[in-house]
Length: 304
Image (cartoon, rainbow, N blue to C red; front, side):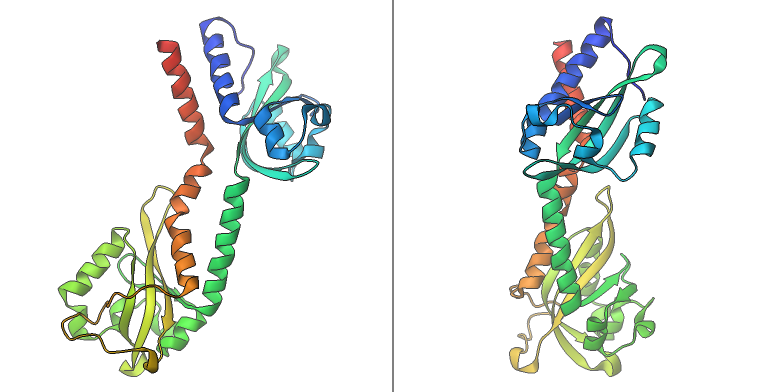
């Protein structure tokens, strides 16, 4: 929705709201020609630059946007545009979760653009590092994915090697394929899947059956994966086969389905750390939530 010049009480509220956003976010103002007119302290700090060095620079010299023409056409129509964008400074680059807000002048023509951005440079760096760790884990560990009801979705070659199956032999079949019939009917096994479906992860040493009912012992983590609303959508299991020399049979009093042991493998621990912090990173990337908070803050001040 386009934004014009404001007057009266609504105009005052709009200006107060934008001032609040300016305290929370990096803000830069551009002319309709794309030349930078001003920038606030958070924006300058994110780039490690000064106002003197930045003001007067063209948009393309600072904002690394793939399709500037498409962006400008949308802004000229009065449309707000949200995007993640890399901004280039003299000493450092930064990533912003940005909203471009057009200001329309006489004749409903584009007069200026104000860009509000949340600095997500650190979050992107952590996400990239976590992604690399997960890729490393995928290449060195057995990985298998299940639907919430326990059906095999896919598995990587390392996991198939552990259990001795081809992918087409297990895809679409239930996880109970890997345990004996008595265990699959036990309360412990039913509870195990109930916890996973509820979003709880499970880690430990597990006795499993490979092809031909060959017993294999694996150290593994079962990790629920979540959608944007925080609801579990599938289970990803990371597994490392344990050699016979490294295994001591669990006491008879303990169920062999899940004998808790420390997760000693560094790659598994890294993956768990990544998954445990996924929600926090998603919240850090949510510009809408932060803007809503700023709007609520200003409405509260106005009503006081």
